[in-house]
Figure 1: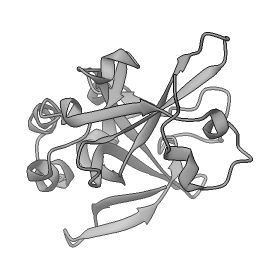
Figure 2: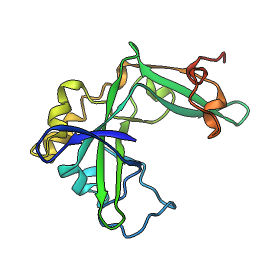
Figure 3: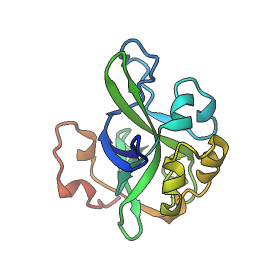
Length: 184
């Protein structure tokens, strides 16, 4: 997963990380309780995220995401969520480097979903306004100020529609049909 962070000189750098946070203190990889997302309400106080929140904030570029609802037949119905203009954006994220395991990892911050996303899911990723990117990334930004930036979530600027269940299969390759709307 690519993510953007500041290097030691303060320049933006793109790195790749595993999709879930592997905190710096972890001695072994655990797949039983992976830490996929960080709740923005309290991430700065959680042991798994505290150090990253102070100095390893990142941006995770995207142009869309999926959420699922339970279908009438009990199956999982995927919903394709994107900005109205279909422009790229960045999720607010945290990253970590674990020297014990030599693993770089990242995660997104989530918040209670806002309209219209709350029709599909009760939580959503925080999509930062581009004007806050520099402050979010900079480790000199105090934790309280960084947390305040998260309230400017672009969630209400998104729209969504139902897509085919081929999205649910790990065998499905990247294909334009995965974002085509389907009839209800």
